[in-house]
Length: 335
Image (cartoon, rainbow, N blue to C red; front, side, top):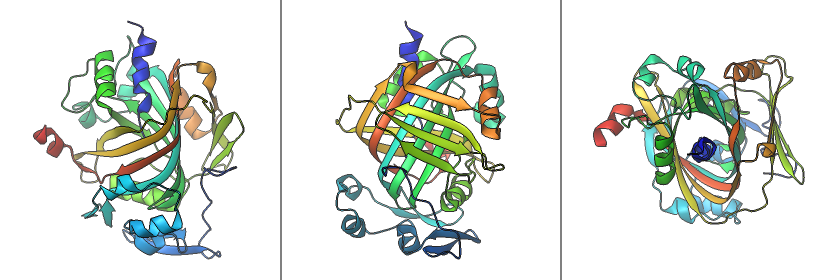
């Protein structure tokens, strides 16, 4: 069996654009256009009059329809929001109405991946081994154009794992996840470019988020993400990916899930269901260019000893529903 083809099925992993930027910059507190909201006792800057300022994760779909009449909301009408306590009062699922993403899946040093996962998590899930000594890393760049949290950009660096409660059978597990369109991972890094996204992710999901600049631009042929070092303000990581031309418009529903440790010390899981409206993929290594510097995130990525790029996914249009985290035992007991 060709391991490149087998490993490529991990490409839809971990999941959620203007002409020159895929998300708007948020004004600083005190500037025109900025407001503040309180989350878990913290005062957070948000866009004045934006969806979050007005509706705190629960905007009526009629409002969304009036403000963005070009967006198809039919899928969201079939989903029900419920009020939840996730360290602050919110609603689940969180809706992402118009988004884009690119994902590149690389091989990485298996021992290093295991070393980065907490022992409690490793008892339930492990990195999937595609061949001796090599696991998989998914690097995903998201541009959330219009969502319950206004708009923001996010970069996810995740280890590809088996599903909790299932055996880790290497490539066979990857094939099973691909067939069920139910992908699992452990999130290592998750920088974002708004304080609202950072606080919600840290307080609500205990995810490794921090605030930094994420510059996004595009040309006729490519999309370029520049992740800045939060300490120096210099460009740290550059991800340049090709705009694939042969796009499929067949609607594809994919679930992306993660396992982590909650604030209480209990194992949790979270997931997002994505409705992919336009998508394409490639195994051509020339479709992705990853440039690393000597910044903190680059240094971390270098420690993973990335190898071949196994699959690239270009998803210029998708929608998503992100559900609040839940105890992992509740899922294991229900299976």
